[in-house]
Image 1: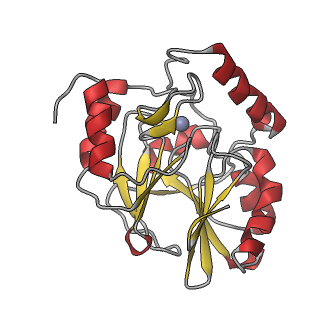
Image 2 (image 1 turned 45 degrees about the vertical axis):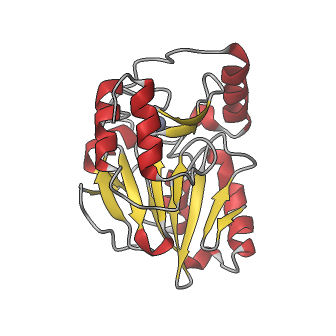
Length: 242
Ligand SMILES: [Zn+2]
């Protein structure tokens, strides 16, 4: 579905998000969701007036399995280069365990809904990446839209937000979520399955100076209330003023 001109989302709802970003007729995919999203890519490209040949790159916000879903297939079948922040490369390749400390608070209905969605979209057997390029904090990536990388460790060590200034959009990955798949809570919040919550909250300081009309999370609907306001709400929930 179209979010704003130049930015589309794959998937039937906003439980797990992968995005198509267009600049000058070329496309960068941000995150790869779950494997079952693969079949939706071409249809979504068509609604943008684009074809599979227009896809230049897949950039991952971090190495969690619900973000690398179709990455290996896209890489091996279509030769689309895949990249991730260097601190998450081993996670994306399946060489280290998920650093997450478990589910955190859970409500049965939402968590079952998430597991069911994941199961239906092949997310219980996500292929690990056989090859992945890396980038570092502060880099401007040579992919359509030229996003700037802002490292936001906490959710995972290599969690990175991607700022597409020309599209007025900040892709935050799971640096924060607007829907908690484990509790059903909506609005800006620390994402479930975060390895280090205190660090994740601290990392938000790196985002709050950014002005972007759209904050696009890995889970949940776009946030259009300003990055600074999202950060303020999350800090407040974690007992820090400002
Ligand atoms: Zn994650």
